[in-house]
Image: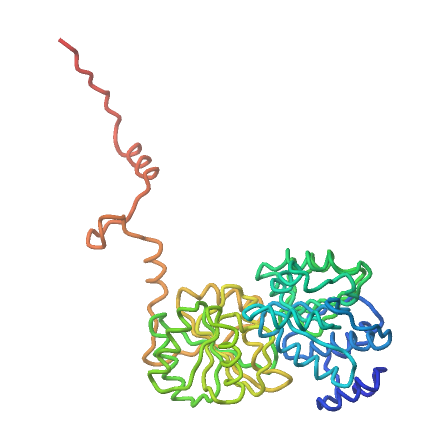
Length: 428
């Protein structure tokens, strides 16, 4: 199905053509028409499938059909998203869709000064794209009023719930019009997401373009089994052997990210880090340099796992598996986008095998194991034995004794010995 077959305003069609879009993706084909009719929608679609256009174009179309004057600090459309990077990216993308429309768009997020954002809001705004926490700050300072919001979009809804934003999102939605349209887009569907949708939407239509919690068919998944202490060494070996040009690496902690980047810089490899301790400006520069090809390696925590559109990214490395299996889907969603091929490579220690098992059950697919010569891991049966037979504290390993619980010791004593009568000394 073609975009030019949709009954969209000429200005929007002109922008779509300028963006180089011709064919609708599955989520766009299913969502745009009912959304243009004002229906509430819960859409389950993977990243890289054109979700932004699926919710932005219907909102722009309806705003053009019923034009209203722009008011200071009083937007008509609100788009909530979990991270700063995604908010900024959405603002740029939606601005390109609205480039021939008389609409103003503003992104507000943390990590930067509020003054510039406040001026934009007060000068008059039609569409606000925001992270929940920063938007609540602006509301507290009376920089913005949501009472005229007719369209509410929750992008990456599952991630917002995972990050603990549910109370903030609910508070923000309470301030909008009761008769609003709500569009909820999520890469994964969980019971919490379904329950939340029931709370904030009315007679919503459910759209699924892929099987539940699926990953893109264009992504090849492999696992390297490796000891935790040797992951940096393995990464350097594979980087040299396989001549990776541009790699996005995910770690579980900021400390792991910093340590890996330090080792890469010592090896004269262009690399940067992106995590919560870095300023918004630093994170923006790192991402821009990576996208432009100035950096070979970008190391990030899960703060960068959602919504980032990096054209031509071939490799995503899970230096550590994520704590939540659902986050695996989001991490590897950076590669294999829009039909292109990609590679998802995970380094898995023995202690991460249970997490790997949960990931395979979630995506309903086994992941190929690769055994790298020289990086053999310890025997699994010995690992399990060591975990189950801990030495008693204070005796050390040399004692060779395992800890026996008091209850068990008491039971054994009762079985193996006769109870002797207690002898009482008489006082003289």
